Length: 334
Image 1 (cartoon, rainbow, N blue to C red):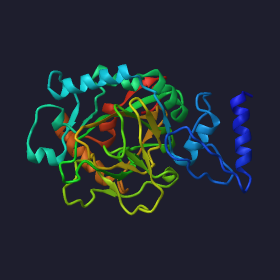
Image 2: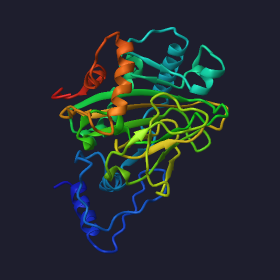
Image 3: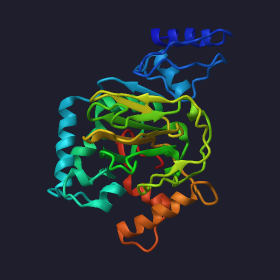
């Protein structure tokens, strides 16, 4: 047995004791409370990359922040490609360019100031290179196993709030958007492209909520309007402990698709950029969401996809099958 496995076994043994408390500090967030109940490792796999303390932190909290994982050089290249796309110097098939609702209503600016998000950049070789970074995939494998699909890609350009609070992203669970399972074999990689803090709208997470179930989502009733597809959780505990993930350029957070999270307003004059990819094990399978809480997002996605692909009828499953790309191992099911 490896030294790491020995240490993990010892840590789990300690968790069985009534007064057990592990002080895991792999992230910049404050130390969080850990359960005193016997701990079963459900959410992480043994790959000799994450330490036992890091694995236990993710098990309890549903996220883990890895410092300085993506190089400044790579991030600068992603930023330049983003600017080229915004200036329409390159056309990317299938790419969705999203604009903040408040900015669109006020004026159109043909550069990055008009764009709040690029979605589905899998056909752009430079941006998709993020999804293939070896250091990212090594961490993803700790959650999905060796056969890995890149399912959903985004570059977020959170704009300065226009005074309507529309730069917020409501608290939500990413699994709401995904018609594939099991949830425990899906993980998001989210990398800060510059310093991210509470002033410019860092991620906010509710630790431990990944242990719950998928909740009902819909558009929040915000006076200033809500951006397209920004659904929010209905009826979550607003008093639940919150952690604001302040990050430096190149820091990367990995989190479970059931973790409730969102982001606040960007109260600065600059743009807050991040690049992300949702990965899933290639062994995952599609499900039918008819009659479930996901039916509302299914109908919305199908309507948008029908216009995007100029097809009269397209299934929710097919919209994801078009986007999915194998990035490691063998394409088994998805």
